[in-house]
Length: 138
Image 1 (cartoon, rainbow, N blue to C red):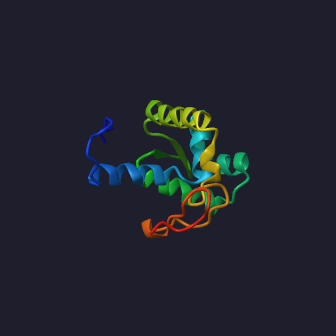
Image 2: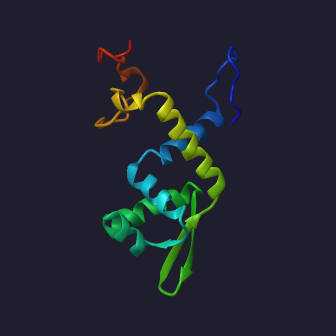
C-alpha cells in the first residue's frame, strides 16, 4: 500500500482493500491483547488463556484468525502448539504508530458514533453517522 500525498487522487483498489483487511484483523481487543502477549515471546493457547482470562475456544478462534491473516505462526511442541509473531518489528511499528495517533487525537476515536467504544455494528457506507449529531450520512 502506497500512502498518498495531499492532492493525489484516491481510488479504492486492491491495495486499500488489503490494508482495510489488515486493520480489520487488528480491530478486536482480544486479538490485540494476544498480539501484545506474543511480543514477549512464544505462548501456548493455555498460557494465553491464563494470562488473558479468556476461554480456550475464544483464544483458539482469535489465533486462527491471526494465523490466517499472516500475523502469527505456530509450531508443534509435544501435544500443544506454540504461537509466535511472524513480523514482530513491523507489527510493533504499526502498534506504536497507532498509540502515537491516539495520543495526537486525544483518543477522539473512542467517541466515534460508528466505530467508537460501545459501537456494536460495522455500518455500511450509507449508514455512517455524522459525528456530533448522530444523523445518517445521505
